Length: 253
Image (cartoon, rainbow, N blue to C red):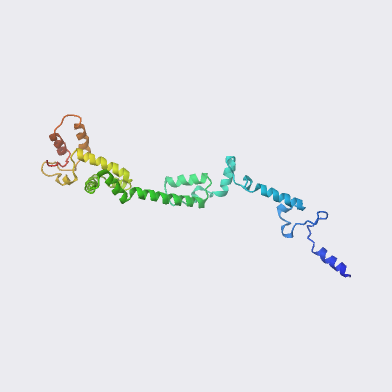
């Protein structure tokens, strides 16, 4: 066997099986020849055409992301790839109607579980900050100072005692969670009522003593009848009679 024939034999043994005669020596590498996209690639021209087509499609809707012109069906098909299997799979850590509301909202809009967790976490943090600022002790003091002046402490203490005595346990819980600006309105109204009808918290200890009926003071009924008196002539004796009727302490004159 000649040296020339040996070289020829080695060259033919290393030639890929996918080499096609007459295609300029083009061949698909062994590791890609069974790939679906390579089945129609028979020349360098085919390869360049495929690459050009791929470049033109990058970023377009064909990669699976709908746009404003897409149909509801296309969007729903996309959502199926992004959202959990069922709304309850979001596993929110709060209960009641809010839980169901946000589960449906996120599910209907194709929000992933990871996105939902981030959104809800940020929302709850922000709401806590807002509530904290609206119900802070510092905010309450500022609200009362605005309404009653720098020497607001004594007036607020008196009104707070009135509220503590007349409000039920459930009402007190509600009041504790109310924003400071709303509490400011309520304290302002109570102050006007107490001033108009001469009600002082310091006088409550005299209820049930000489000149008074025993029993709980009925401020609501008293204020209603006292308001009616303002629409017709009346005397201080009429006011005192109403106070006696409803066990309201009388301020000594």
